Length: 312
Image (cartoon, rainbow, N blue to C red; front, side, top):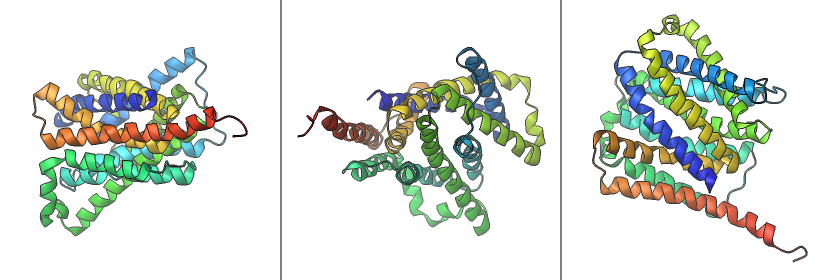
């Protein structure tokens, strides 16, 4: 079960990062600039670490696509698409559709990695996603109003927003699967992190040069906050995540990632004193139970095979 709890820990660290990221955006720092310099710190940190622990050269043979999908597509393009979607749509719509990410990862893990599901995994996945939706509580009522789905502009803008959301969902779901593939190919957690952050930095730098050259110059006053972001969500969060992903199948890992709204709820309660409603508490319990039961069900067949006497 350590793998599941490692992903729970990663989700908690990702929830903490919002305490720093949102104030930066409210201060007028562009999203591309935040993400770009965050990855500069991450790459430098991993290069320094790997220089002392086994070398930083990455074996690329057979892994180029995996590295791009994890870093370039998942970490860079996915994050930017998700951030940009808020300019076109109500946050409730964006966050609701983001809940489709586990479905992408679950089916991609079966198709790309050949992972097999336990008999009741489908029901447990539905339980976890239901818990995540319940946690949205009153926000779901806004979705009953037609205008909520129209976005902030005309129909074309609304469809651009939908496209950005689904791009982010697909990128993040596939990043989980291809990250698992890197680990299966013998990459250590540290090298997987360097591959992810390095590919993301190259992609973000190219996007900045093409779309927003001013993003390459960040005011020194914000560098400390961005470095703290890199430590919390990047180094600590992703280290815990890849440790967990190494222990559990990708389709179960993505179910455990639904713990993020549970952690975010706890952070808001502790940091701002926001109240926790009964539906939110119930949804949090459903998410946690779904992930733990899915891992337990996946372990049982392995244990039977290991304890069953030969010739039985």
